[in-house]
Length: 404
Length: 78
Ligand SMILES: Nc1nc2c(ncn2[C@@H]2O[C@H](COP(=O)(O)OP(=O)(O)OP(=O)(O)O)[C@@H](O)[C@H]2O)c(=O)[nH]1
Ligand SMILES: [Mg+2]
Figure (cartoon, rainbow over the protein chains, first blue to last red):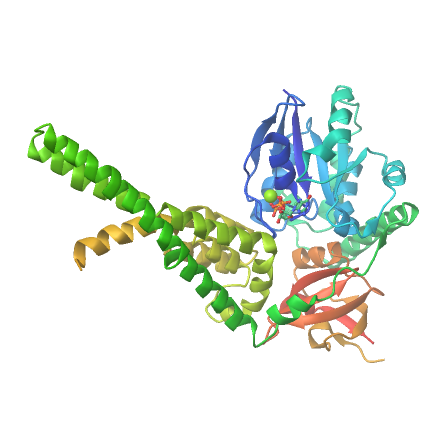
């Protein structure tokens, strides 16, 4: 079965695209470096396997998860590459796409259209890039028609003219550590490398700008701070706002809404079902130790663990809202000073907040941090975030030691 | 016109990049160039954290966050 790699810059919607294609449930989030390892799943429609790879800015990896992607791309030379771009950041995204095309790989450029403010003539873009360009919305399968029909009619493996040697030499001249290691080059990086690097990337961007000019790439002024950003990113307000948000989340989860549903669930399990079942057992003259086992062990024990389910669900809901809304990337910026004073980095916020949901998966997301020292510290700290699976444990220990 | 580092730039004022110094590791320089930091491009600092640990910089209609280390090797004027 053919394998198709989904490659692209971080946060362009690769995992969203992958999930829509394969009905998998890869983790998505509005933050750079959400995916930290590759994930495979089958697509029934096209009868092939898609691989969701961590985001990377170019073929010069700068962090662990980018290396995972580059390794995968370079070790699966036969696989077709879907290079996912985002229409809002197309210029930067095309840098990776052109690198892959220059490498001689079989590339299909897929432009994920988020927001509508950008005008690109995709036919012209396709003509200039020399590879198929398809536009779609990653979260809407109805827009995938062109994508499916292209792959259904696609001929077997094109005769690609791969250029690996030239590509490696170029990267080595650019001083890229990854390729220097690969080719066992140990001489020191010199000023020449810096100059070559600058020239190299400049050339690539000149080419991209020409292509985009031809395909009428227009962007309205989309960035700049919105009113909400002005408040959230305010120097003095950002911390209080964060604390209030955290307080509201925990209040709703553990005291008001969450507690309400927990109490209902506990009532149903222990009082309604449990009590009646125990009465039934008593009527049947069941030995007392069995009744006690059922009453105190199964219904009380399981009941008190299961009754945390609503709180876990609500907590995850809030964490997902935080993640998808882009608040966490703003938080990373705001809390950078505070976290740096304890030897962490702003990017660690993502790991720490996700730690409330599940510490194990959260500690993996620390991988995307470039500072090694901060990375290790963040990963070691994340188990201390009170993750949702620890709640029942607290309840059991608390119940054992503090009866009232 | 006086040249200075992007890390000392005023907020919401437009500057032109004069140069990217070479006294950073090549990895960081690669990333800066890949993000589009070249001579003659215009940049605007939109925000920075209290002690300027990170700067939010606008370049080519995109907001990019730069660490102080990175911002202090981008030379600008304007
Ligand atoms: N409105 C809208 N949002 C989208 C679309 N595609 C992706 N997103 C959002 O964009 C954000 C990033 O999506 P991901 O799929 O996690 O991005 P990714 O490319 O896998 O990112 P990394 O794993 O970090 O490299 C998420 O918040 C998605 O909900 C889309 O077509 N429309
Ligand atoms: Mg992803």
